[in-house]
Image (cartoon, one colour):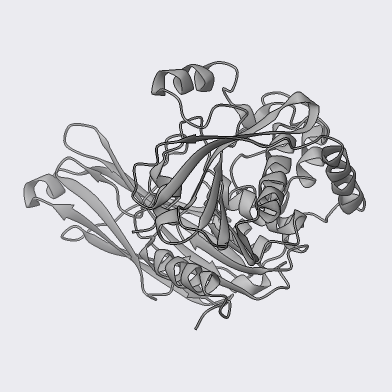
Length: 435
């Protein structure tokens, strides 16, 4: 089975359509299996409290909120349950996203909560702000800065733990004295292979060998890089100290200036990692896929935009979309440049810097085929921003909307099926999107 970028998320809390607490849980279902509506149509959610009858009867203070764009409460009130069930209807007059948030307390006073989502005329959702006029000039200058730093890739072979697979740790130089750390694996046999770059979801943690050795066993030349200038593999204690120390709230580091943002080094590391794969004698010269989820989805789209040698980008629940979403009355995607990550900084400066790192603005520059996944109840990387990004892509593309899915791996099966199909087709040099 292939490695799934979103099956383990340490830094970002997973939000599911149904959240269980003790003997009760809410179930929220839209009346349309797709969860997709036209602007002006009505969504009807069925809400049911599941569990033992006595526990359901003891439920306290059941309430609901409907948030337009996942941000502003447009309606709220008590849940009028009959035998543990009720329905709620809502409309959106314009293209966008509605998020239903239901909550209550059990007999012990503990919270139970669940979400419902619906997307309206998603193909019409637009970016919340314009792309900076000098966006391309800025990133050309950054790539030129990187080009002046020799990559000096250094590999060290180690045991792969898989028959027929070679494994290496790798270090390369990056801008301003920083480094790119990662792991590389390839089939042990002679030959040239399709290449894959795996980029990571948010957090500060060790990579796992199996993430590359499993792919190499399938015939890939695969490189997996850290999002940070840290060793690819280290102890949990080491990464805990980094995450609670110098890298605590790393998205906010330098985020009030486009020249100092923490993501500058990260974005350029992705470009260089992809470029490195194309220099290897064992690359087949044809297939170069970048894949990741959440922060890794962010990096996948950015890499495809910066490096035209990428042939396919697979991005599940991508972060970094619609940084200025609050200006359009909708929730932004992680890392919440102008909300969660601002930490008292000058809003105007943070907002301006965020536009140079917004995945929405990179999307229009992507030339390769793109697969995107997004969840209907994802409050970490809201679907409204993901669709705003997706709508900017002019290349062949496919989006998988998962109406019950939050940010974690639950209810992501629909995307995983398409990811497998895309990966197989890409490896074989087939049509993308695959039929």
